[in-house]
Image 1: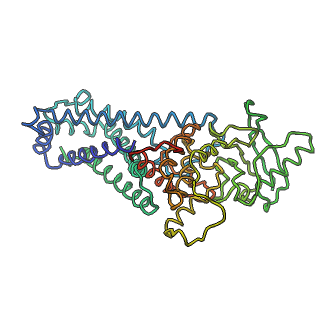
Image 2: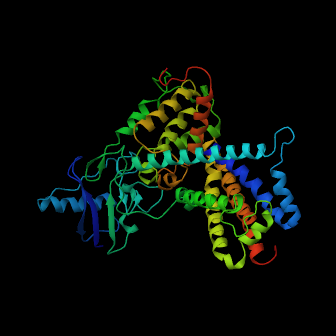
Image 3: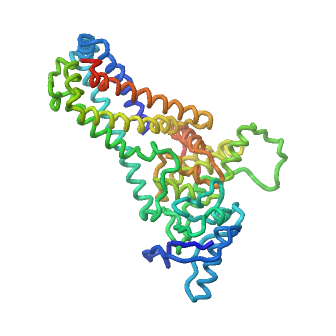
Length: 210
Length: 254
């Protein structure tokens, strides 16, 4: 859970920084997107680097889901008779929404790839013009896309709030003071990432990026 | 105080069990929760009914015998206490109180609110000991222990093995118990010879007993009557990582 999660977190940071190039303008954003396909050339043939990253991410996602499924099945088997009186969450709300939050994020990722990678569900859908795809995607009349995006990012924020701390704990973080620090870092990181991802659709929605 | 109790009644391990409603009148707010159940049982006996079976022993919060899920809270609404230390002043006149046994596959119900916590003994038997000769207490200064380590070991050693951590865990995991029993020894010089085989053996025994896996949700430490911190599980994780990546023979029991 922890190792695959950290791999995905590193991707999330790089992806967010790339997204923010949308504020540098049409040419810069498109240039960045095209550069992604050429990293490593001429040592690697064209788009090889991108495909290596994609395979790595796929392995991380599958590993993450596999570990989560094992834990969920074990949890279910460990308590065959449920409590009649179920108490509201006393520990961390984020920790108790990891599984359903993860499912929401997975559904969003599938939609997101069909929308902005393959362009299948995008109104422009031209892979050579990613800036135009993004602007068309979050246009005010397609408010439901922005809403779904926002919900998914907030779910991601909750997921990271517990996930970052939990990963550090699983890898051997052991002091109470370190726990406070890890929880604080996880919270700040989750908020920063949420804001970093959400400014793009809201900039399009408000006409700041067009 | 007049109370309505909804209590889990199950005549034996193979019975299906159900919640049964009882009225208890004239409850003093100064009674402990178990004394209130005693009052109910005395009335049930006089009425010729089967009294409610529940575990209890010292009734002063140190034996770890009592364990009731009270309104979905392990050991009741008060923090840092066992069910026997809970007083009826924590409840209001006219309250309805749900009382259930610990729920876990590894803790099968024996009768009513009594569960078999023998799975904890299996975890202890897999490594919760030291092989140093014991006998009479040695001179305390002969083996120096850093104050921070002594304090952390002591906070782990406060575990009374009541099982509230398992009862409250959304995964049905006993990792707080296992971590407390591992780290109370791994922080002390006397616990070093078996440090690595202990953690592997006890985690294996934990998994074999049918407990769930830990996801650091933190519900356990909230209900723990001894306030064992969640960081204890981090110490267990650190020991487990070291033990499993270290070369050499890590077979438990060798």
